[in-house]
Image (cartoon, rainbow, N blue to C red):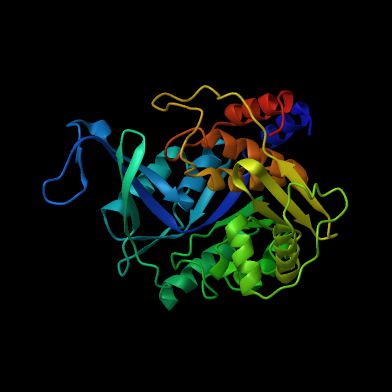
Amino acid sequence: MTPERAHELVDGSRGKQVLLVGDLMMDEWVVGSVKRISPEAPIPVVAMPLDKDARTYKPGGAGNVAAILLGLGARVRVLGVVGDDVFGERLLADLKSRGADVSGVLRDPHRPTSHKMRILAGRHQLLRVDTESTAALGDEVAGTLRDEVRAGLGASDVILVADYAKGVLSEASLPQEVMAEARAAATPLCADPKPENMDLFRGAWLVSPNEAEALRAAGTGNAQGGGPQAGARPERLSPEIARAGHALREQLETEAVFVTMGDRGIAVFTRDRAVDFVPARRFDVPSAEPGHAATAVGDGTGCGDAASAASALAIAAGGSFREAAELANAAGGVVSRFVGVYSPTAAEVLAAFESAAAGDPR
């Protein structure tokens, strides 16, 4: 893809209406310093500065995907569930302040808002504490969410499902009929699914598991796949991944499967049994927004979210699967240079793509 085409797709994705469905979370980051070991147990003592910067709160899970989509210029309607608690209020207020439509987010007093607290010493994460329920939604809440999804199909340019297996997505809230209804409405439905929920997305337009998830899902389904096809760069794509990608594509009857492989790139499997390996490339670190410091190596948090958001927008703008994978690589690459979640701008993604296009491949 040329830089001109990348600009065309990114510009064309601005203003696209995204229906985002998934598991919403609140991420909390506690940053301090370690100067001694506790006398009570062999653990570090984290000393927190007495200022507001010691704790930060950001949307996590599908909330992070929403923030990334909004940062790339999309319009986003968010569907999901939060608890009737302070973290739910804070999360919805944050998303609304960024421009998201959160009127379809449901409050469930029987479950907490998923909350992940990470404790860091400088750049090093020491501990993560998760407070959440992964139980399936009750019938009433699941039915309401299902109806909200169906109501939004025709008014959206693309549907993106961000699945973290926290109980929000199930046959009750996302029945198989939704896939057929999305196709009837000519609305591509893209999903980043967990292996345990993979069968929910039979008939989707695109599914994008990572390497470990693809291997697990294909193995769980006992599906049989083929080997690498001509032009597949087999030296960069293992036979196991080739089999898993083909098996998932056939098992789920999707138009395409992306198997994301971090800083190596993305393997693209399509209905004609072609496979295209889109390598990640080196690029210069883009200038960061105030309050963030880009580095040579971040911690990988949110790279998959950025990739799924960028690929869905590229498809909504009329891009091919390979073009979508190239922009996904660029978006994930930008986020990989930061510690914690980060919402790249369209300018940063384009700068990364142009820098990679001018540089050497990995």
